[in-house]
Image 1 (cartoon, rainbow, N blue to C red):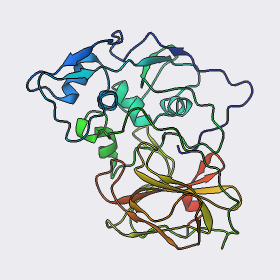
Image 2 (image 1 turned 60 degrees about the vertical axis):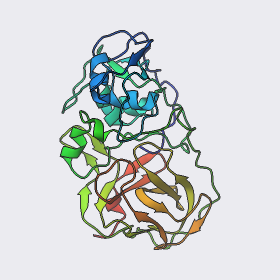
Image 3 (image 1 turned 180 degrees about the vertical axis):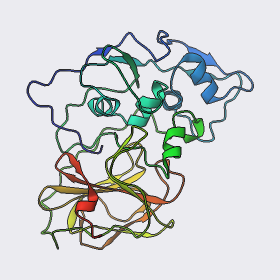
Length: 309
């Protein structure tokens, strides 16, 4: 998800077991690892029972993740979470502001991602309970934008599918902008022309898409769905690549992810149909596409309710 839900009264604090490391049951690794000839990032992660994603992040590795024998890798110190009644993998990812794919990979889960009360789950070292305002974007808990179900599922085991991110992670950007201009119409226009790769909602694999993914040629124009003001323009939110958030009258927010180029900046006023970016493959997707979301406040809504048929 892009926006954190407000923490209301009576909400129990998540139970965090910081003595637990990973799904393998091993204790946190406080030392490092000396790289041996022929080793890979994926193999080292499997050896220590940690996620490939965490190992990449802690060492600021970059594709193609070549390792030099004799050098040392830092081993991430994970934390654990005890599953509570009513929890789901999706809900836990929202609690800690992490994307669902990262949680699935860290615990070697397979569809349908069933969990049980009292079960211990491994969390990324930088996970923390979300208690942010409705205006603060956090890391996505949406379906990891991919071209197919197979791509989404293979991300749990393939080191090449891991998306690099600098460490330490940059601060979460805050959406605080001027009042948006009046809407041009009650609905939205399609931000790009193309085939829908992934629709809104829960998937058979156990993942969830908070928006839709639309296939389009690289460089195709991405257009503002309606009049609004740019609330965020950047690439700090993991999993989305170059991302735009546009705030519209009436509390609606639209999101445009995976663009190769951003053509507007935070605070800019945009008009319905204005070109705001270009379709790309940033954020770890394999084929050019646009991930598009519509939110009413903090709640993701089905974009098809606002788009023409």
